[in-house]
Image (cartoon, rainbow, N blue to C red; front, top):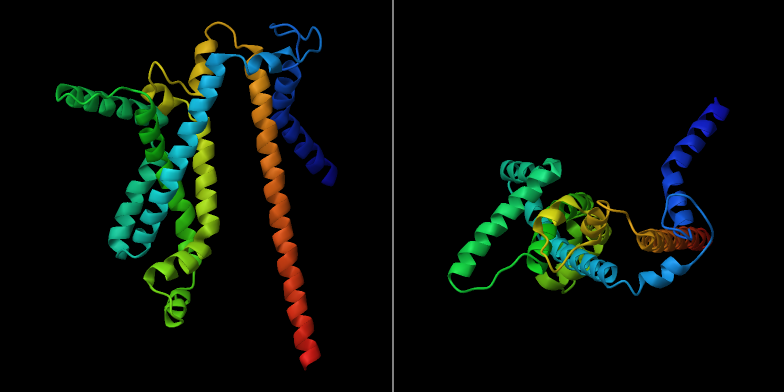
Length: 280
């Protein structure tokens, strides 16, 4: 049984990571074809001189970070407000919160496109310039990211001991200090998780970005899709390899920090037990 489980796990992991390994190998392929003809690093050198790819990467990062920060602030505030609502009203609002998540992305993208077209016509008719581009991309990404932040922060709010806020205020904190030093500190893991999830979904999104992007600003996903009509440049393989390695490095760093914090907590707990035993 153990041999079967290990074999199944090995096959599953191979199936999961084999495409990434192939991508990394072909990022060093000398030719542009699908056959490996020789080892070279020229695509990494050409990557940073390709204006279209660099512009798309810049657009993706700016939109992702801006939308994620805004969605994290809005989603955290919404979660705190929801936690204080009446149970019936809260249930109704939560059902509306789930809609953007379970709604097909194609419907969301088309809806945003129609909304922005109407907004463009109305604003342009009164002399206010409005075009598809930075604003439409960021607004669309903020909208579909907010529910993920809410769903990450709400469980932390439910786990928090409400008496901590009362204790902080009894010790001299005002409402703002109690909020920033107690509430935010307690729900910080949920806020960070919501931000990282928003950042991931924003960088990965294609459908919504495709319908809300402009002619001058394209995200990486939209640019790569336009390349598939001919042939995807090996420079994209190089860029994908770099992104994968960066994400892997961040993941390893986060796990190391988390493990260090766990070890510190265990050591502190053992130290308190040792001091308590020596006191007795």
